[in-house]
View 1 (cartoon, helix red, strand yellow):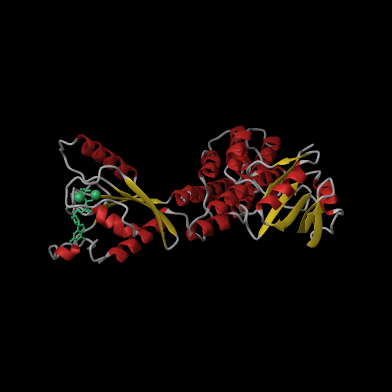
View 2 (cartoon, helix red, strand yellow):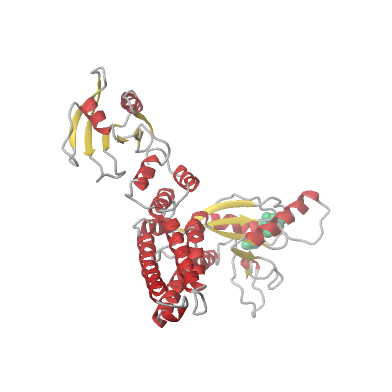
Length: 424
Ligand SMILES: Nc1nc2c(ncn2[C@@H]2O[C@H](COP(=O)(O)OP(=O)(O)OP(=O)(O)O)[C@@H](O)[C@H]2O)c(=O)[nH]1
Ligand SMILES: [K+]
Ligand SMILES: [Mg+2]
């Protein structure tokens, strides 16, 4: 039998209210002991809490959720206590003293909900993202994923595959030859449209992109004004900017969000071919690596002189205009000219690289679970033996089960749930 777990599920005390949650087979015994009665299910009531010796602990709002219709699927108890540190400590100690009760591990309530089939793995992951969301776009994408749309979709795909597999079984039973001639043309159409639909989901940006933010590196020759523009963009005197060439050596990163879109801005050392200075040379090496790894590179040097794929920017616009045929966006770190426009442009570019709030995004684990399904379905064609078609459909089904967590290994679960905080 499972332990009964308990934890403070609200923020750290002192706070107005502290919510202590209890889940497991002994939750009923806990409420009996502390409140002296079992409250009516799912109705808030006030109770005087006392410990095992009858000493007064607190006056609290008590909620009793008998399983299986509870958040975790087990018997659940919520105590809304006064949010003082000592109150919480005393209530937790009283619960911990009861047989079968122990403090919860991070994410353990959610893990129980998963084990009891209250949520699937994709929903648990989305919940983790929702709790970690710091920007508006992160929240919108995570809240959408948490509604179970991806799981529902994968369940439908799984049903489709089971129907297709049944057709293959029937063909195997009734045909003399084990060849695909006994399958209808429609069968292959359905297989390829399914593969196409999965492929379309796989083509979407992954949800990790959103967690990490879009990496924007500022690059160019020494004294181009990179650090000055960097400071202007992140709205902080973060980088040292001076008239001396080679001022910036190390990479400097600052996370920032515009319009709810997360970015990581990166200031880099000025690029030049040769330098006597060992430190600067290392800085240049780091700068080149940062450019390779960036999603967007703003090139502040001469137009067209930067590496491929960069966005040319004309800096120091206040010092006089470049040639009239220069079509680069003009910015000035000194006056702020063009800086808002540049921000807007970055936000627009990021939209193509990030999940859309109205589309369900998959994370890397979910993508690697689904890829074998798409590949197995793509491999099905008229030339195959029926038994091989059946095997490919089985591979697709197993992939869907990995996605939802029907078939998932303990270490995948450990990794996921350890991301959660205690009490969740
Ligand atoms: N007038 C004007 N001066 C600027 C502007 N941006 C930068 N500067 C000046 O240009 C010089 C170099 O600026 P930095 O921001 O240090 O240039 P950098 O590209 O980071 O230089 P390194 O780190 O040495 O490669 C400084 O004296 C800045 O004050 C600008 O928009 N207008
Ligand atoms: K400089
Ligand atoms: Mg600099």
